[in-house]
Image 1: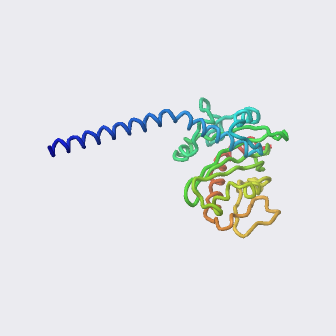
Image 2: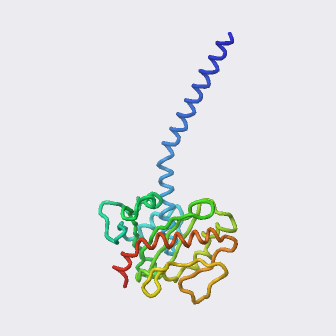
Image 3: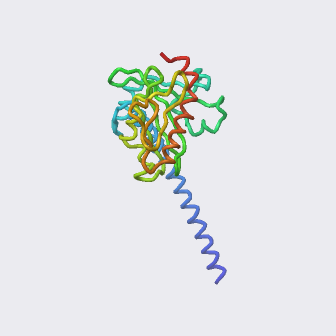
Length: 233
């Protein structure tokens, strides 16, 4: 009787484990298209925000088609890469490759003021996890038109402030080059002079995240340097 009871418990447990695993697998399969759609909309929404176009879930795709005019992929020499869709490039995966094998996405946009801008994705490391976003540049490929940043787990009120308007707006009008040399944008603790065209104020209490963001901008954007040099006005 005891053996029968143990066998029953074992069979019942096995059936339950298999049933739960099957249900979880089925749920993941059914939810995957919706999850992928959500990621696509969030990505488009972030790009629009980098050019000053606020969007909601309902109108993101309409606005993206209106403002984002073209996309393409470059290699590290600034040359076009055929057969690769810029929107499908996952920056985190590209960063694991040698530089000469990386795909560098570029998106062209025209905001309401008529400025011809390009949008570049950026991704790096903050204090507690990934930080990422988009940087849009004016036609001179030197002046920042706008930015949008986000994070996975930075501290609320500290590092998490990278995705707030007061912080992001400080990047508008900053320049990437100094006398022809790529210097990116410095995120400086203690404040910067209003006349500093290459610097913004760091987040108070978020020094590590601020420096991570500074490194992210330099590392990601400098990969486009050959393209900038060939196409700057």
